[in-house]
Length: 403
Image (cartoon, rainbow, N blue to C red; front, side, top):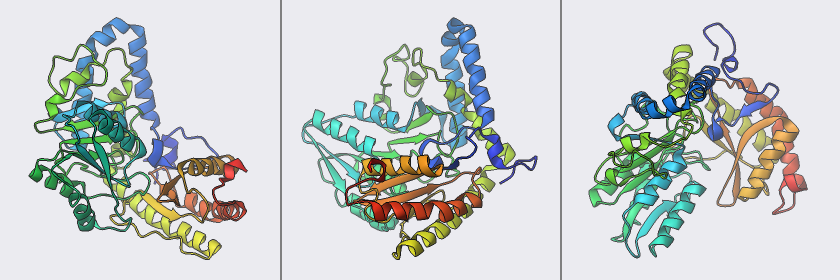
């Protein structure tokens, strides 16, 4: 995509030249306009901290309203939190518990979210039950698999809207509806959803929904939302007690002491920049087409180089996250996946996602408007042969970064 001035879209970002940035899905990238907006807020904060912090809750409430507008949700059910994992932690910390309660997660659940569920279960002598969902399962099959595991002890269902390791959508709407019908609370981890979908909460009515704004929505990092409705919403309190404690949800989250929340205040600058310079609808269309192209050429290159089939059959595929199967024995566990990612960064000047699931390593491609077809053509031509070389030289259980 090009800017209105005819320049490459990447000129609206400060991404390091000479590096192929193909992993937007992990940490996002903040447009220059939003960086400057956040720096401006920080300057005001440091010029008069007393005035800043005494007036901060009103600023945060205004930002919360703007962010809710972008998400097409009600600001009255929307709290601001530092990231999706923080929002999940808020839910876990405030859930009603009972001895022997069960928490349902899936084998696609993000690692930090699963760790928090285990901690909650230990607090009350409960258990976490893991629902295995095939990578190619469609919406109906995934819903049936999750709901078939619900028992009279199920106290919480945790479901991704878009999974991290496997880059697929889950039927969060259907599972939320089924949970409500049974009186079982549902927590939707929507870390990747804001910006990726025009209306990420459309058709989804869970008890709790958490989403990061620093990923596809490109807001400054440390900016996320916790949307909560229903009878449990007023149980939610911030992880840090502050002077907003007497207020109802979500207003009590507007008071967070001396935290630097300038990312909240600058978030709308990111949303507006992409809308004004590219248009969100055009951006999503471009990302979908680029994802199709990238997946096709890189999986073809990997298949040709290995003699195997690198394509991955993903049920409920997501436009801006694509999987390509890595050759064995690469990335069979989290440590080896991280080592391979670092190795490609250091030796090939490319930042990309490497994930592992059920012992299989994947290249997880992600993209935004600043990416180009040439980014992925270069990867197919230059980096795929390197990956295959590393796989052929590695011993089972050995990561390339440790050789």
